[in-house]
Image (cartoon, rainbow, N blue to C red):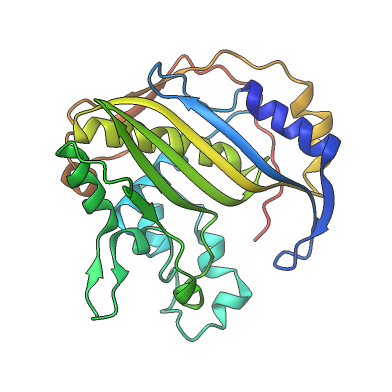
Length: 283
């Protein structure tokens, strides 16, 4: 919590105003932020200065790991975050690549599970990394990236959290995640939860201990219509202690994540929080 609040205050104190062309809104913007999460000691980085809907964040991560490409698929597992980008984004609605209602195109998990190769076949990046780590292999390229510039026009949104690098030292697994753009009041808590949970899950299904997760953000920003709520409400609140994330120990393989795992296989222990804050969302 302290590093999250410090980042928010740093943006307010030192950020510069930039107009975002996609949303037409101004953003108070800071370049470069580094966060880290202690997965080994299960210090779950959920926001406590407002209520956080952590289940949707984990559901979204599950959808990415399964390679979902439809907002309907995400809704089915408990995540509504893709409804607007799939169905209310004017640029995507007029894109000839869009395949009808709820279609997201070739974004995020599609790239992670079905990256198109020149010969027409596809590469399953996630399976390659899982298989290597299960066999104790770290080739210094245990990387899963959703960032495919050649197919930006085939999806509704360029990925924000775009690349994940896993590193194995002895029997301990680490994760470094890279994010090009971050809506700090709204998106960051989703991103924090997902980075933490991604490492915890990958360590569990590959048979390793989880170490730390490192989270690098390039462009961290607060939208102009979010600033007052952040400055005058959320930053005035005292944070609570970090809770713990409980993951069903029966999750033992990538196939488990692909088939039967639901939100019922996750719980958060000891989560205390202040009341929710309704930050505006920019499509």
